[in-house]
Image (cartoon, rainbow, N blue to C red; front, side, top):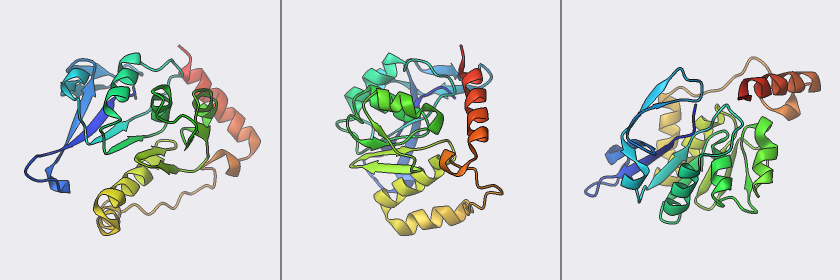
Length: 201
C-alpha cells in the first residue's frame, strides 16, 4: 500500500477511546490509488486541513522509491505537537526522512533495513521499537503488535488485553521463519530477490 497518513483525533468533549475519529489524510481529499494500482482509499482530508493530529500512523509501501516529500513535510509539521507518532513496515522510512528517528533505534521491514539506516536511524530486528512518543513496527504483521502496544500506553494494559482477546490475536505460526535471523539464508535471499523484483519501477 502507498504510505498514507492516518491520524486519530479526539473529540473536544470526550477524549476516551470511543470518541476518537480515524481520518485518512493525503495531499488532496478524495480517492488515492495505492502503489499496486489495484486499490483505492478515500482521503477524507488534506494535509493542510489536519494540522494537529493526536496520533499519527504512517503505513508502508511495497516499492523502493524516494519518500513523497509532501508526506515528509507534513510529518515535520505535526510531529512536535502529536501525542504519538507511529509507523508500520516501511512507514518508518518516512519518519526517518523527516528527521524523527535521527540516531535512534527503530524497525522496519527487514528487506529495507539498509534504507532506514541510510536515513540516520539504527535498525533493530525487534517487532516493535519505542522511543519516547515514537513507536515503529516491523513488517506488516507487526502492526498488530504496535497497535496493542499503543493502546496499552494510551488506555492501560487492561484495554489492550481486552482488544487482543476481542480480535483473538493468539499467533501460532506454522513455520518459524518470521524473521531473517530465524530463516535459512537461501530462503532469505530468495524472498529478498522477489521483493526487489516487485519493488522495481
